[in-house]
Length: 87
Image 1 (cartoon, helix red, strand yellow):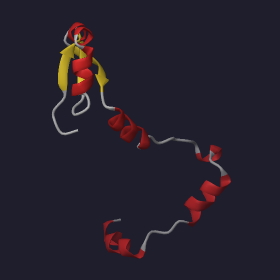
Image 2 (spheres, helix red, strand yellow):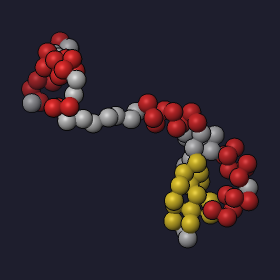
Image 3 (cartoon, helix red, strand yellow):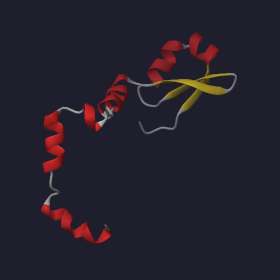
Image 4 (tube, helix red, strand yellow):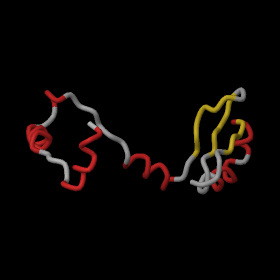
């Protein structure tokens, strides 16, 4: 999404919903109420991109053992040794 966010009052968005659906394909559309943004209309592609970035946080005690083992045995790649002086 390259263009800045468009802000539209809720009543305007309701009157011209199809127009703002089309605009949301190329830029986020903030729907405002009393001048304050409340919701954002975005394309399905942008929504799915954001969902792929979702992360689930769990306590270590709740993590499956295979994940705990993978973390405990993980080693950084050799090329990362160049950053050792930073720690």
